[in-house]
Image (cartoon, rainbow, N blue to C red; front, side, top):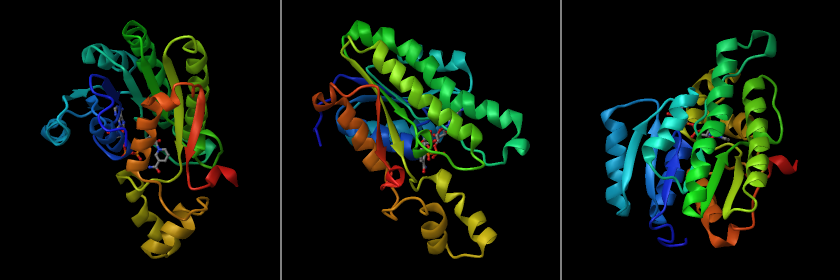
Length: 260
Ligand code: NAD
């Protein structure tokens, strides 16, 4: 959809060498945007991914290493990119444990990567967007930004936090040609979720399909995963003129989870 309408724009997607971030980067590139891919690694395959995306879509793609758990590196990512018309705050990690057992270092890492990074990148990107006279901030939150599950205290707190940050960013940019919105996905079959399947099969003595339907998709009424392409196209929609008056809000891509 919206063939090449983002030509001349530059998108930074944090945490984009895998999963949803990569899917969003691909769809933005397909719509004509130049892209900055990011993660905390600096492997040949990270740079090869950038070359592949550039060749497939005829856009400029760079890979910039920056650790989203560190505020200074978040800001440096945006500065190094040099320009930022579209900022997608996607990097995220998960840890599951009851509150009394939740390791403090995991709490700190989740809050830093899933929430504080978006504050730092947004702070660095907004002046660039204001100078350019156009901008889009898209925060990849979660159904867990709107609802909760036990044993996911840090993740749920961070995702509710980023929904709050989305509202404030939307208000602070309301008089600029800039919008800020959050996408709240339900379960998406990314490497992050795929990795949980073998352990869950062993834990419940279930087969793969049963784990997917009865455990992973228990709260997803559609009983289908959302896809990275759907999240990418939702991001592309937020960049379109149709979405110019949509700001400070969330869109759920969760097969009905948050309607329950
Ligand atoms: P993933 O593990 O495939 O991707 C996470 C990305 O973040 C990777 O590129 C990883 O390298 C990067 N990353 C992790 N730590 C980083 C750090 N310190 N600095 C820079 N990059 C870092 O997972 P995913 O499922 O694609 O998740 C992406 C986002 O979508 C996360 O914010 C996650 O919370 C959210 N989300 C995922 C689902 C799902 O079901 N998969 C559902 C709702 C929301």
